[in-house]
Amino acid sequence: MTNGTPPLRRSERLRELIEERIATGTYRPGMQLDETELANEFEVSRTPIREALMQLAFAGLIDMQPRRSAVVAEISPQRLCEMFEVMAELEAMCGRLAARRMTDDDQHALLVAHQAGRDAAESVDPDEYYRRNEQFHMAIYKASHNGFLIDECKSLKRRLSAYRRLQLRVRDRMRSSYEEHSDVYMAIVTGDGDLAAKLLRNHVIIQGERFADLIANLQGT
Image (cartoon, rainbow, N blue to C red):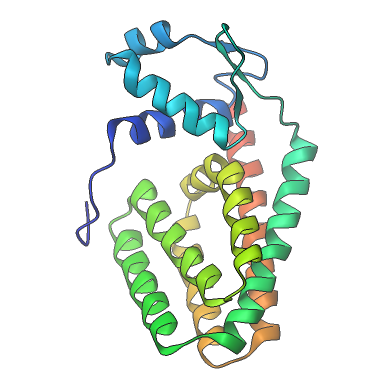
């Protein structure tokens, strides 16, 4: 890992793998995910599988049914589009508030996250860049100093995490994402809330579009 990023726990890595298969349609809506079968497939015990499934259930990607296997949740393309639209507006609000309320500590945290994103982008590691990307966005949420808004952003971000991570694999997306972050960073630290909101809104909507591009590419292979 770069920049001293701690290694992922086994359950977190399994969550990412299962999450990716759900997002790309390998595990389709309504499909049952059996703990024992998954443990055999990934060559691990059932305990980290169970932890990963609980994380995915909390994110709304699967439904945990009593005395039955976990079931992949139904999330239609239209629903995903709606979720990205709401995420875009929530993040735009965070950017506008952060530009007005950011403290020196907030600005430092955002700068550190942004610089770490640059290093990950240069290493061409989509998963590492995704983690740094999340830190950048979380720094903006925190700088808004609106607890309710932060909670709402975190909740929806968890629902979209698989799709936000996968869109970074579209060609040149990491580079363009980092460039968009640079513009967002400058708008926030210079106090231009309206520009920060506009840039973040476009940034999140582009993520949704890039995910659609990725799925189209996968379906064409």
